[in-house]
Image 1 (cartoon, each protein chain N blue to C red):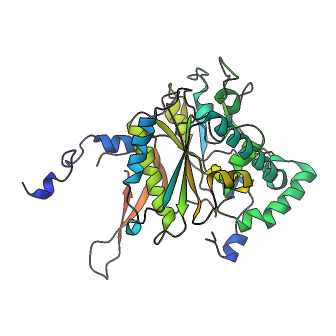
Image 2 (image 1 turned 60 degrees about the vertical axis):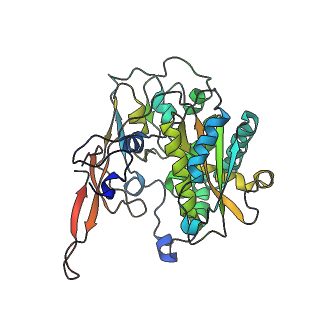
Image 3 (image 1 turned 45 degrees about the vertical axis):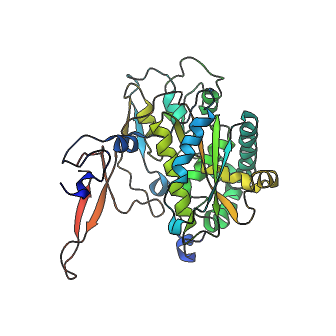
Length: 125
Length: 252
């Protein structure tokens, strides 16, 4: 599949440039977290981890009990938090401890052109 | 009352009315990524596939083939092989995982090959997911009891990949309405690099090619809730040809 012209391919930024790549930041309310591990389970690519376990441990059933406080992993240069803001973790959280900070407007490749930055729940028109 | 008012089986529209069942399924469906070990009964899988059989396609071409995989042994092997091929790719190209000289070399390799040549397959979301899988931070098939692979008929009318997507979405919505959790798993495409799996499922045997893949199972946790999304800016053309369109903020 060749959706891009050569010049457009040339313009793709590198993948650990936070201004261009990071599209969302989620915030954990640690006071309301009961460390059940559901956000870790529901993350699409295991980006949410704790100090004691990761997604593989929970899905395969190796790890049981309290997981510890969750955080989002970063790339090796400690700049980009690899979260795409799908908010499946927010839906899975039983205590509503996860919220999203959406001030990011990622660059060339991941810019959402027709979307405004405000986040809204579905509206019954 | 005209005949048009009676078309919908779920009642007619009134402004601000609560979601009807179909809308509720659409709005509250979230991907489920952890399943109970309990297998799905065959009749339920057949009922879900029936929704896909009756999905619309261009020119009634029905350019799809469904493969249902229920064997935990085969799914575990698919998982292992997908992880293996991911590690192979990310050893060369996964530069966001590395530091120092290795990062330097790997970044050059990625920049001059996959990031530019396969820029859709190796866009950042799948790229990061594959680096996480290469570091043993995530699994692809979520230990699901059932996996449905959808193959696409290359001879299909006009744009068969859209038809495959519609069929898959019918499966997902029908499954959700029956209490079955689903998750799209496009990374099953990695199996096409293995001759073993190409042969077993006919993944690239003419006229078929890999379309998409869906994991199904009873959800192990409750994930169904509405989530916020970005406000969408929609263009409305209402006046004459000379008038400029009106821009509406959908969702506010």
